Amino acid sequence: MGSQEDFELVPPGSGRMLANVLSGAVLGIDAYVVEVEVDITRGLPAFATVGLPEAAVKESKDRVKAAIKNAGYRFPSDRITVNLAPADIKKEGSGFDLPIALGILAADGALRPERLREYLILGELSLDSRVKPIRGALPTAMTAKEQGLRGLVLPEENGPEAAVVQGIHVLGVRHLSEAVEFLNGERALRPIQVDVESLFSQGAEYDVDFRDVRGQQHVKRALEIASAGGHNVIMVGPPGAGKTMLAKRLPTILPRMTLEESIETTKVFSVSGLMPDQRALISTRPFRSPHHTISDAGLIGGGHIPRPGEVSLSTHGVLFLDEFPEFRKNVLEVLRQPMEDGQVTIARAATSITYPAQFMLVAAMNP
Image (tube, rainbow, N blue to C red; front, side):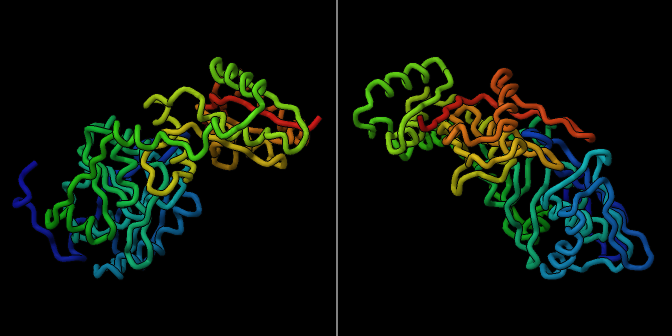
């Protein structure tokens, strides 16, 4: 590859008619590389997206068109075809907005194409061309490193989460024009860096503490033994006895999370879109307390495109089922396999996804 001086931008409308941009998508709690191919041919204005796109991906054409125009660039008045490869896996989410927009600009000659193969790019675009945060930044960064790419270009808000992965350049952008100028060599972006060890230790503080509980010595002794061995617990007592208060404080006496456990838990919350604000890494053991009206799909995961359920969101933590007899029988029955195997496999016609489910079950009920 030659230096940047070897390449010249061509006038928009007369540039190359095909561009390839590397992006990523999440399948389960892991990510895979998606090649966004953009082809512009002469003809009546049209915008087609192929490669099994879901509704949010199909709608990206309207966001991309408005974002390109409002960023001050020309939107081609030709026939545009966008292919998301591999084409046999359903694509969902709004993270393809930014790579599609960059692909259109590259195919139209407004963007140098040579650096598009060095970075994995993803981000949602607003109509005024701002880059908005997406799900799955951490697993996508891990995939970019495994593929030997130079770095990752993504929304600035997702930067600290992706920067947990060491050894690649994580570049945060706030505006479509920033990404264009960087890829054209007109702007320098400083890689986002975080101290993983410091981040891990600083976030390991709980809002509650087991020492808040006064009395109930026999119950506290039982919970301490259960915590030491990772045993499941059921508490029976009248309303107001302190069952819920004890359960909420149980994670505070569990062993501290390892970095591997923290990363796996963060991946589950990241793909679910449940990462806490200003948190790049989850280093406290999760506590999940679903209502007794929850469905079996909500508990173990499911949906058209399978999502993690409460058993996966509580992995390496505590799953608390209050009013235990009120849960439907079929909901409790589906807990059997996750509790035995430490994982849950959700099978659909098109795909089969496995999520982690290593949790400690705590149930509470009235006499």
